[in-house]
Image (cartoon, rainbow, N blue to C red):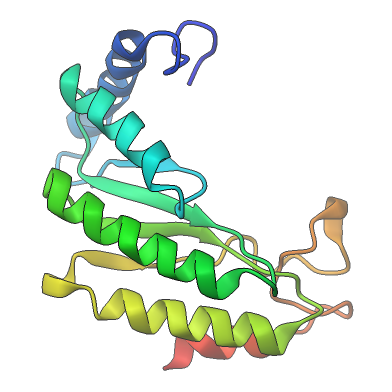
Length: 169
């Protein structure tokens, strides 16, 4: 955040101060808003422990932990296991709910994307005490490789693919 001053790997204290400035600003305007600290690669527990241990040790504030996950057809089962394990660790370690803020898979393999997303949603719903607030598909309406982005949920003609059906269950 705001590199170089807020680069967590160089100054966790600065990162935490910037984080808290944002947190406090949100709470002044909308006190009941949930402030999410969102980190990419939700399957990498060590990354999350490093950031959130650093925030905790420097007085960092957050209400929820956000994660991203962008698997491939080849690794989605492993990465899904890893993100669920990471979610459970974050909940236990920091007593904080979690959310998948971003996920997506290539639009041209809708069957695999559907299977991945359906299972991820089901597993998130099964997390104890409703501590996972949900799963958000990032840029689902993106189609026809818009701006080079191929992880949307619409086909080349702009119609939703099967992956969107995962949200019906």
